[in-house]
Length: 247
Length: 370
Image (cartoon, rainbow over all chains, first blue to last red; front, side, top):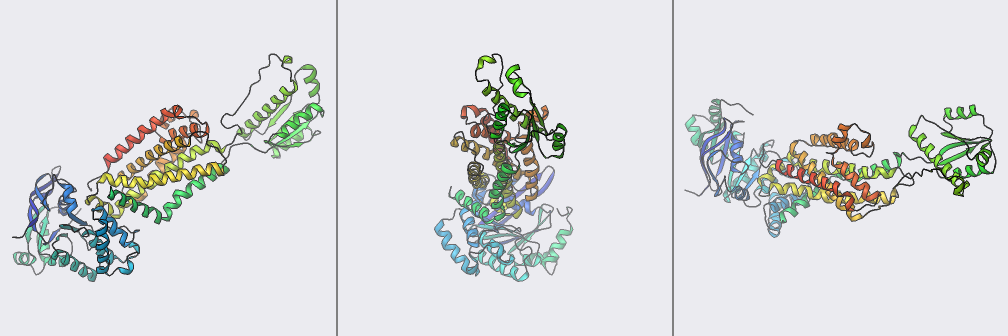
């Protein structure tokens, strides 16, 4: 069994008598692409926030990148990357300035920033745009750049919160190529999405319903279990049983 | 520390690439200083004065010359004008004021020891009229002293001497400058700071910053430092404009003025950070700054309307407006040339405000996303 980078046990987050996250338990292995699915309001974001060290759970345990979510939030933050559906780069900074800034915030040394950013710009084919403002880039490139920035400091885990929202299918495909590449280099990818075709790309998928993890397996096994042709069908059958509706 | 530096550098990129912010920051002081310094002037200069000298002798001539010699009046003389004609002239607005010297002026003065002159001023503009009457009374009083050079003649006369202290020339822009300083710093510091924080929330970059190991408190500090530096630069610009454009000398210690201003700037920045904590959009933040900051600043600072004339409740309210205290400090230090011992109370109040605002702002900063 590979090394576990995320371990959740009976993780619960309670707001008053409302259980946003209700005793969820799962493990994510190093280098795995873990799909975190669920309808709006199912508790995905709350769970992800706890794992990112942004909020404390009410009860249960969770270890992220080897650190405890109660006591070692700062250490967790240092070892994860994060990218949200909202565009997470500065529009009026150039490509290079953005990389320098986020690299610097994560404490990457100046020399390394220089080396890695040169490489990154070349990989992305952004040589000519490197000194241009990010606001001048097309959305697809911005998303790719945002992802590259999120893993620039070589985190153990990268959390992607609906990263491909509003992006065209071709760019989404390229985006997933980047995710595969990151995973093969050993970075664990924790991704939420509403696109069920993307769920098929994941190694394993969990589906949250009403604050609980209702299903967790590989996409193929899930399809088998629920007798569906695709992940769309699986998701539909699970989400049908939800009592809570979207936020 | 290195991270903080990187963050601050990023903030400077933002400011210098946003032409609008730069324009607000450095255009506003210029416009305000010019507006308040030149246009909004309540001093009285070059007022039309009609002198109707029925006496036409050496003494009345001396008085007329003396008035002429002052810079306040443009004198027009018409010894033969009838009283009704004078009134008609005032009514039409052809003159603002008139001084009538009766035919027996010199005789009365020499033999009776006292004489009468009549001053008529256009009361439809009461402030100007009052000032004109004051000026003329002073000139006539001076004249009286000259004529009776030997004090023994009038042993019991009490001569009131009026002086406009700290502003002997009656320079109107003087009083406005400290007010304008307070106003500009207030607007620039609070509005720009709050907008810069809220912008990150709107753009979604705040989320990324909060997930990063960069400490939330450091985010606020990194946001405040560039605006602190820019505000001090801004303050320097205002001072230069004041000294070189409006010809107003700084009487007190410039160092003290800078220190006090820095304290006020920190107060405003804290207020800006506080506003940014409780708002979610740039528009709301700006609106709060303009409505909740600008108006009270203008009204309760006391540079347009004297606080003493306000109803008691308003006077009490004015105490919580930081610019009110800063205004007092600048007036004392810059115009009166007073030292720290005269403004320590105001400084203490401002210091207290800065500390508590900063504390509340830091306390309320939402470390965890909603």
